[in-house]
Length: 188
Image (tube, rainbow, N blue to C red; front, top):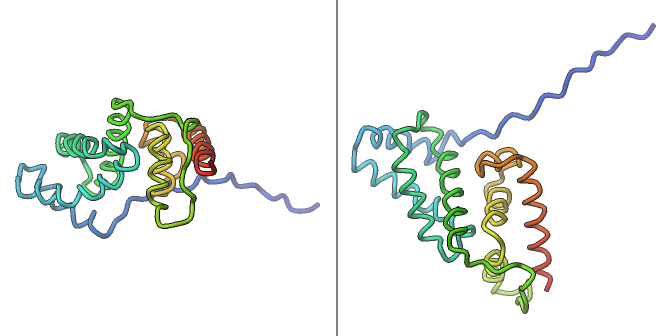
């Protein structure tokens, strides 16, 4: 009789880990000092976080990015006292910034449906970044957010869902629709 092979259940992949080196580790003492009420540490933390928050908010909130950045930084500093692990700063700030960018962009209601995009410049050429911004501007904030989290931040569907506070299935459907919308607008 052949030996019986036992199947081991597939183990789910480990959750994405937050960076444990670089500026985020260096920020841990600033977070602790800011939590203790040190105004200089708050200023230094603002200097560290502003470029990152701006990079996240700009493609999502587009023209309203400065408002989204400001709202996100206000939310970060209001909530910094509740952050238990200073090394979790990166993920927490990402979540706050993306949610604020989606909220601000939705409130502005300035987007144009992708179906109405006409006369986009050719994909090749020095205007490529402007072309991409133009196509993104015409998408909903929710679609821009999911594209930013997947394509710029490299998050999987589960992690993106946690940031956006939606299910994994919702992330997958938004991502599918966003990519299709982007392709349609880009090829016109």
